[in-house]
Length: 212
Image (cartoon, rainbow, N blue to C red; front, side):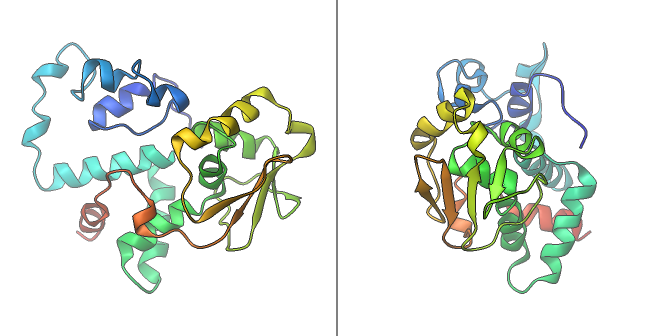
């Protein structure tokens, strides 16, 4: 996947909302959203006409926001939408559930990482186990009953330990249960539900955009 190498806090300001891309800094007063407000970055940010977006513009911005939250490119995001469209139920909710069930997201949700980008690195570098077996594919879809853990050699990594110790402050969803604090593991006890996603997302706008 292509990497965004600029300051990720600019993305939050571009979307006018906290996307929680910078780990613990997002929860501190030093967060640029807290210090500078939600106007776009750049010298003309305060003069932005963002508030006048209508129709297609609003739908596009909502799609971009969700793509940035979960850290993916257009092709991959579109494939999730198409898969959600083929499933029973409400397409928008199906889409968000598929995104939440990604392994990198689950690693972040359990608290092994302070951001999804950091969680993706852990998965890519082989630090994560699913039911005791190494899985290095960030898009791997977890199932109910799966146990997600950190390999023994990485369990004392200070970055992972710090993330795990501060995870309570960031909050864990009800569909994930900490399995063992000693060996750093968590269990998927149920499928994620729409109400478990607390960030402000209007999935209906994304559906309308792709349905044109």
